[in-house]
Length: 317
Image (cartoon, rainbow, N blue to C red):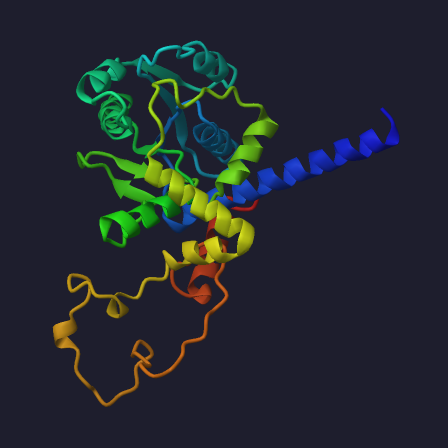
């Protein structure tokens, strides 16, 4: 190997290591911020064969190995009988990891094709059917948490879809109770950029399974939201990070939702209030951090340090 090639290889290795450390830190921060995983948990990682779920499983395994907490990971894949689906890919890959896994076969594809008219998007019904099967399997496995591979861009896209087309301020929560009330669903990739997951998948050489085997197309509105975010990233560096940070800095008294704030009780008290509306002042625009904060930095920093000190290893090793 000549000198230029050696330098290139060293640089690629350096960049790959830096990316892995960043992803591990971001996943650890999300887990700590939203108390996603505790000692004794049995985490069911839903694996589709796409870059996001591969990255989720890989990063959780690495964090588990470095964590003082003991928790279990079991991978689950749902084979929905899509035409041309390479059924051997995921079992072959998972067998090399030495972790428990289950492949569930359920022909939801035929159900969707029968119910949805030709040419219409099948993703919504397919997702509901898939969710029901995974909830059942989680109960059978005794899983205490169900981990999904949604990332930061998914959360932002959902926020703008609800804003533009649903008329509501609603995103995709990092942690929630399942709609049947029996499971806790977590999204450890909540702070991770999609472009970083794309790079990580290439570096790790995951055996990616195409997501369009069913013949359906991604929702047009979601594609437009994704394109908008990518354009902002290109033209206005930092804008997407600022919008994302705002999701963790909500002031209900400055919105219009009467269910979140009791406007009827608002009255002059004669005392200054930091939450009061400076109606005639132009508010300065703060520099937003890379992720939403739970309260002030002063409250958040000790919490994060306590996680590093024994409850959760956020710093990549």
